[in-house]
Amino acid sequence: MIALFLCLGILQAPSVPTPAFVSTPASAIVVEGRGSPTFSIPRIDEQAVVDGRFDEPAWSKATRRTGFSEYQPADGRPASERTEVWLWYSPKALHIGIVAYDSVPGSVRATVAERDNIERDDSVRIEGSLVSPRISRDRDGSEFARVAIPRLKLEYQPRRSLFFRFITEYGSERRAALEDPVTGAPIYVDGSLAGPLSTNDVRMDWLVSFEPTPGTVAFFGYGSRLARNPDLDNEPGYRRTSDGFFVKLAYMFRR
Image (cartoon, rainbow, N blue to C red; front, side, top):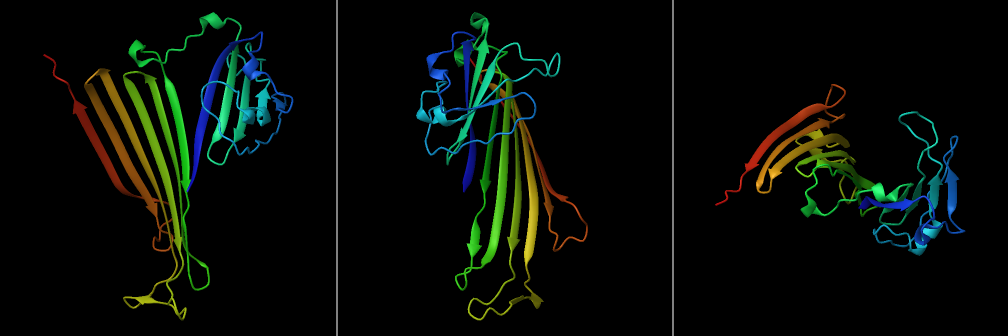
């Protein structure tokens, strides 16, 4: 099983002076954003704590992107505030560190305590994974079956009371023809040759939750599945095989 996690550390700092814990190490790979630069992300067999600080040794070996430009209100204009993006990956995660400088750091608000109940707080979370098991024959080590299941989850919370989640999963399975484990002769099932098989399906799930007050919440969900079997289906493309809706309401009575 191979899993990819996004580790994001965002740091607010004044333009000058540069804090000591985000100073550019001599060994860091710096890539300017002007033109059409290309760069590689180094693999570092170390770990880092997501705490908003770049004091682990691995960050000194990361690739550092800088020189970004604006998209709005004028595309291509040099950014009014400097931003740096640090990138590296380990065997278990992709590490992205962002240093967002601000010329007026006192105007930056970071409201993360839930008790503040600030309605305009928002957050975005992205998670991806890939599962790809393989089954081999003991007789000769050849592949009998393989499954690949990439999965992506997106979560967006524009405010404390509103939450959106979208999950999509693609499944691809291929299986070789059935053979006798000793002689290797083909196997017949119900009089038909059990030949190779290939299937593909896509699953998508949506969820919306609304919690206007603690204890009062409404959930709305929808899920669908599309499947394609090129060995059995005569028509190309995917066909819908299932749909599902659900609604859940909860209310806390107070005395």
